[in-house]
Amino acid sequence: MDSCNYDRGGGPITSVAPKHQDCHLHPARIRYTHHMSGDDLRELRGLTSGAGGFRGVMMIRDPLDMIISSYVYHHRGAEADTELGVNMTEMSPEVGIPEMADRMYAVLSPMVDAYKVMKPDMMAARFEDFTRSSKSFNRTVEEIVRFLFRDEITEKQRQAILDDAVNEDLNRADSDGYAFRALSNPRAPPDGVNSVNHSNDDAEMMDMRRYLPLVKPHIYADILKLRNELGYKELG
Image (cartoon, rainbow, N blue to C red; front, side, top):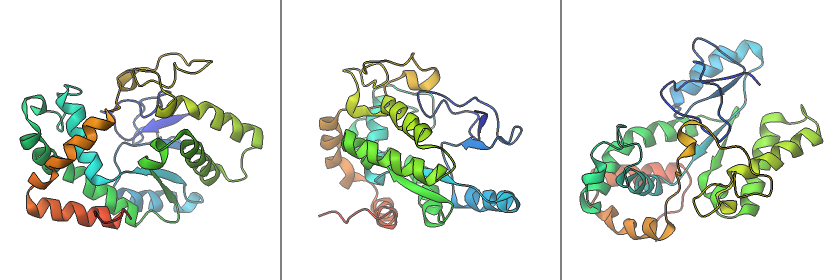
């Protein structure tokens, strides 16, 4: 189905990539973006108000986990030429975690801004609900499908989407972190950025949390506020 991407510099978002058509030049009905702000949503509402509006899904994640995950990912050398990744391989956790918090704030703030104005056109899917278990993954995907398509597709079509979505479930992944090739009927290898394993080791993620107190106090306080606005429980 025809689609486009607002982020021309970004790679595919899932292992079956949308075509890299610029939504500003090729405004397809199905659109993707890696980052969205509240202003983006307001603009989209204005553009689609005369055509019945739109429906969408945004992914949110605990901001503290996003900082840690980004540090671990880029510290091992992945996407080292990006704004988040530059020089990160050379930084110890004591330096890298606070630096990543500074860099990630520019990502976190628009995410929260979009979250606050998303209803009624958008639903938020939590990263944690995708990764907690395969049962939670299946339930979250079903919620997304029902929100997006409602009664506009058949149950057979709905089930086909759910069946194919298991290719993205990390709990079904092989030892390299790829679900799409670990199943009984593996999918062909994806292209672009998703041919790279984006998952991190859980133990390493947990260990990195001890460096969060080194984040600049005013940045840390702002991130905790953003975390609260997303509905995450206060740290015990």
